[in-house]
Amino acid sequence: MPSHDDVDAFLTETLVGSDPTLDAALRAQHDAGLPAIEVAPVNAKFLHLLTRIAGARRVLEVGTLGGYSTIWFARAVGTGGRVVTIEAEPANADIARANLERAGVAGRVEVRVGRGADVLPTLVDEEPFDLVFIDADKESNETYLDWAARLGRPGTVVVLDNVVRGGEVADAGTSDSKVQGARRGILMLGSDPRFDATALQTLDRKGWDGVAVAIVVDSSPGR
Ligand SMILES: C[S@@+](CC[C@H](N)C(=O)[O-])C[C@H]1O[C@@H](n2cnc3c(N)ncnc32)[C@H](O)[C@@H]1O
Image 1 (tube, rainbow, N blue to C red):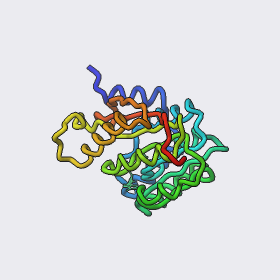
Image 2 (cartoon, rainbow, N blue to C red):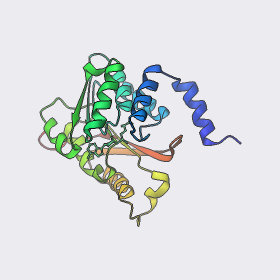
Image 3 (tube, helix red, strand yellow):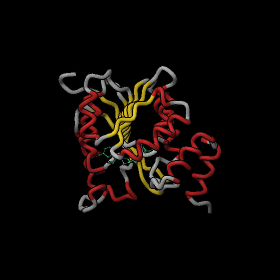
């Protein structure tokens, strides 16, 4: 009986394929000692397609790591598009910038160094973002979702990553702060009238997890 790893390998090979630029980016970040916590290739392609399906030209990402998902977004928005990505660790941001440069998309990506909670308020005067991807410290999910609604517009797509966490999200009594953050994120998406959302469980080379996808149905007062 094939395992879910076999299925992941088949889907990745068949639908994503290998790409020397992305392979080099992953090698560079792994060689630099960054943890292998980037999105799996099938998920990266899902985000890329979602961006294209939404016709998004302006993408906001919280949590850059070495820029793997950022490259996928940058390719999706095309030459006239823009990606702003926020990373707390300066060393990660340096690796991401080098990866984006090598991928030929640095001109359409701005890497902002700082904590999401500090950088997001500085973006209020920008044009609204069409898609927001939240993939940083899970404890801050509610803060990031709030900013996603404020910095978006009705119709903005919001994606919240790692919301299932091996099934632990269903444990209301969890003491794990990351799981609590995932739970609070889901609860907010279910109750905040600014969002209409769902979530899908995923099973890929990174194990059992999931992704929430929402649309902003109403932006915050003041936008
Ligand atoms: C899961 S990784 C991002 C992976 C990346 N999106 C990808 O798929 O290639 C999470 C990143 O968020 C960063 N991070 C953690 N806390 C943060 C914060 N408060 N603000 C911004 N970034 C943060 C970490 O340093 C790490 O690089």
